[in-house]
Length: 187
Image (tube, rainbow, N blue to C red; front, side, top):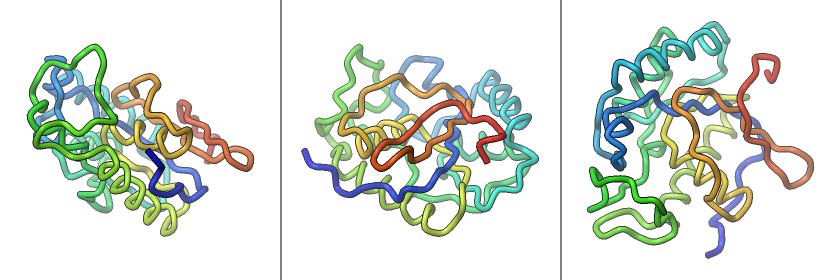
């Protein structure tokens, strides 16, 4: 399956939401609008020590409450914008179901969003943000990292991004991308 297009080669910081009720239950959250757990709120609050006093060029979040609330706790304020383009993939009939050992990323779940449609949506949203702002902070869902991996390596495989641990995502060399824990001196 060909990649729809490449990412604009500019860095950004990504923060996955804190633990949600679906994470706790080990169920697929998808676009179900579920809250953070008490642990998720604590994780997001801890992220504030790293992210909260940085003068971000732009802060954006998925509108789903688990991401929006994480952004608010991590920043100590609301994000600049909520963007539907950052929502998690719609997993159709799999939403709310137990997370399988092998997640079928590249197939289209019944009643759900096709992988190519999801990746195209994420890429278009990220590219618009990267064209607009220097090093934005983007708060969203684990699917975003899967889409970024697909766009930069051709595979969605890799470790699941941890809850509320900021990641530095930056071009490296002519074609490669770096995804690692964010350090304040990255900016």
